[in-house]
Length: 187
View 1 (spheres, rainbow, N blue to C red):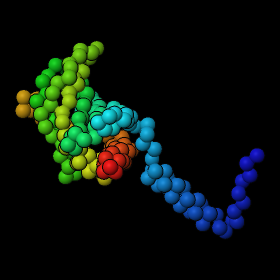
View 2 (cartoon, rainbow, N blue to C red; view 1 turned 90 degrees about the horizontal axis):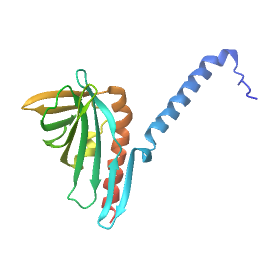
View 3 (cartoon, rainbow, N blue to C red; view 1 turned 180 degrees about the vertical axis):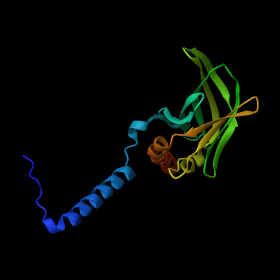
């Protein structure tokens, strides 16, 4: 069925090296052309298209666990987006504000509580905040290792990016918001 490629004995190192180069090149092409459609949904409405990224877990706190977030952007809203996030804590706390930092991009502001819900171990917190969508392409920079800080009564609660999850998702997030920017400007 499958035939093994015959390589001359003196060229086996060259053949293996060539194979490694071809595999790396293929991986790069795959990464740069990642399919983004499975990571967001969109809906055309009379006053513009609404885009919603599906929830993604990219941040963690060793004591509290993971932080999951999703973004919603609607055209013609003055370049504003909504970021909703979910985190878990031992007690029901009141988060005052949040700060997402990636390189030089800072997305921060006061948060609104959507709900607190008791779970088997602790509490599930769900919050929302409004942000400037023009910074989202810059935020999703795979070379950075971003952090999220929640402020509870002025005290910081830090979540760090999971390195491999961030490097996998950042190019997808960038392409989603690049697509939105291009589509909105195509009027």
